Image (cartoon, rainbow, N blue to C red; front, top):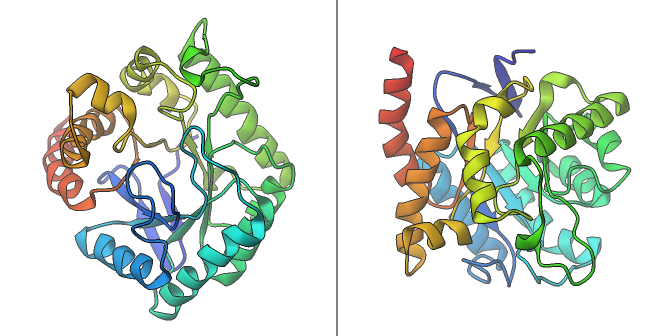
Length: 281
């Protein structure tokens, strides 16, 4: 299976010509690096426009924090944050919008409002999500190994993290296809930082070519994550962004088709070189 392009509203996103960038818009009070900055709908819209101007190909709007220890919210609350932003962007002609949610009800309403992609960090924990996503231009399935009550996510053990992540992603993809999602619309995300140790994250990034053998485009999100700070010694968000660019370039050169990032401009500048070098091979 080799997918040549993805659709996002009226936009065709070619794969392989350059690394695509998904810009993060957190419409939350408690996300780990920018919680509260864009909770106001107009602030979120303004930020989204800046990301597009900086070179984002896709906007990823999330209204519920997925940071460790965050408090879950209802679908109604999630939609009250999300829909005003989607509606204003769509009114401005923006259609390349992904909704970052684990709830099928939220995904369904967001797609009806004009979003194009569904980004499910739970990999179809909601049994309705796959059928809802048949209306999306793309479904991103992320690996997130469930933890038991009281278990620290960093303590989860894998005998072979690449093999286990590959198998779970393949299973989630099969579930989505059975529900009616076209295989060419599925994007896979190894879930860097979700229930993995620093070493697990490094192994997954180093072994991205093995994950690419699954045949679906790979999305990788390392932006500002704890392991980036742990390895680089980054002391603040600005330094994490610098270190993130290094990790993102490594992921792109190993087969990541899409990077999910907060700092779009720095990645766009750096990836211009990475992509040019990779085209020589």
